[in-house]
Length: 250
Image (cartoon, rainbow, N blue to C red; front, top):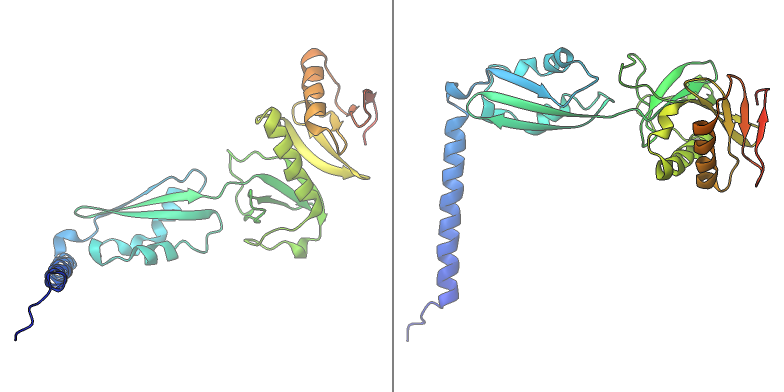
């Protein structure tokens, strides 16, 4: 007695043949595309960058011009930029028939840090130290006076520092009240156990203490809207239900 092929086995065999035909067609078309001169790259466009110069970024991938668009590995394109600390990620797109588009996703600075010798380095939101070869026009950031020894600063590495963490925590409290408030601060530094920050426009100093930050920031906003302060003045909000304004600096 001849055993009949079951229905499921027959469908699986048809599916397998169909999958092999699709794969073979894809491989054949892809192989053809990588051999045709009409798909050789004639132009490369760079988008998404705001600080990094377009000509600099184009020069890195200039060797791709003339190569077949479909023979270019997107991974290899990304590797060309992997050592640039200012680049967080890139997206590579092939545009039929002969264009390559590279979209840059830049790493933005969150604060500047000042080292023991007074050198300035930007750091991003993940505390990664960015290069300071160029300072960019749209990167006007508050300075954190860390006093970190200069040899401890490594470009591309995460910065671990207690004051930096305290300032990031303070910023998160600011953002709950007014996300734009951080732009009015030029510098943070430590005086004793307290963080002092300096108004960017006039230069008066503010100390909030370590508790009820959001409530105190609300009081500060009210004060700034209803009276003026001179450069060098210290607004001390550390004490509950008491405002202290000093002429001297902390």
